[in-house]
Image (tube, rainbow, N blue to C red; front, side):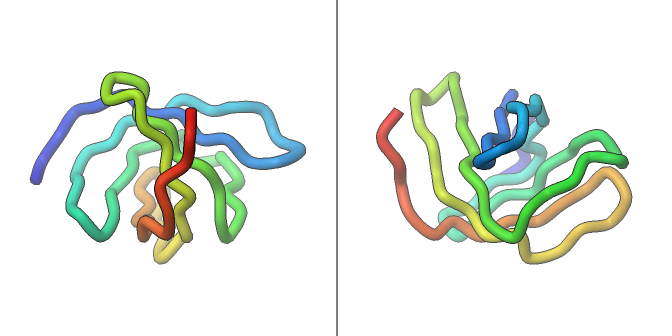
Length: 76
């Protein structure tokens, strides 16, 4: 499902980064983010509008786009 939701990336030891969730499914999401942003293999993806956070795994990355797989739902 195509979306235009604001998201926030959180990883231990790194500052929080804003991103845009451009595509969303039950299995994962496609993110639009700054091209120079370092992403670890796993991190928390917050969806503030829905008051949700997911632990995700980075599946692919191309310039300013990244695909992530949802691993588990987190408490906010």
